[in-house]
Image (cartoon, rainbow over all chains, first blue to last red; front, top):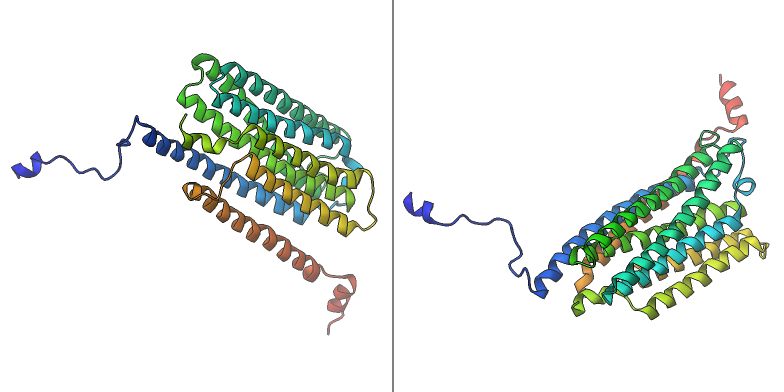
Length: 213
Length: 118
């Protein structure tokens, strides 16, 4: 009895990274966070996949309501697409600035990214309110239900990403380019580029194909 | 920053290359639709989807920095599983629902025939 009490308790899980502090250990820790965030993105990707499938199935059921060709203004979609594409590359520049430990440059490029994101959101809001105004509501037909569900979910993600960007800018302003803030910048980078990737599917399937068929 | 951590961030050149490729791959499908350049709708849709898929791969390589290196195997593995699930869900629903539409929607004469059964 007494010698079992003297033994130190066995560790069945790793409480702390044994190499914590040196470069190798830090790298492992980083991989854990990035892996977790990547798994989240993949599950988000499944959500969008299901919404795309729903639209692909229901997108032709107009219920005597308006069809895509009557509703969509492709010029505006092109503008929104380029707003997102520009925001993608400016985020890339922010990450490059961060690699050079240039706080000012990082923050400036992140602000530019946020402005492009806001431009995209403005265009989408304008489109939705126009559709709502002319009576093309989600209640009108299965096509419009699935359209608003898919495009609206993407828009909400961009809105969430923009709010995250503002929070990140505050954190950068308070603490500068610390290890934790760099990790956050990389996570939002993945999220932001991922949203641009989903938008490629949206404009290909919903807008361009919808207008053609 | 160590070499390991820097490996996944790309360079100025890679970002610009990815951006320019994306611009081209965006403009071609929009040009097809806005310019009304193709008479054959099926081919136009096929080109739009091909351009979209290519641009997605450009984004994955140049912006998301997914690499096939062994150290980043978890990334490719989880993405592979996601793509597999997506293909099953999307192709499956489109296939099944198309068949339902074809086979289950009663045509007018079918209803009449059932009605006149002895």
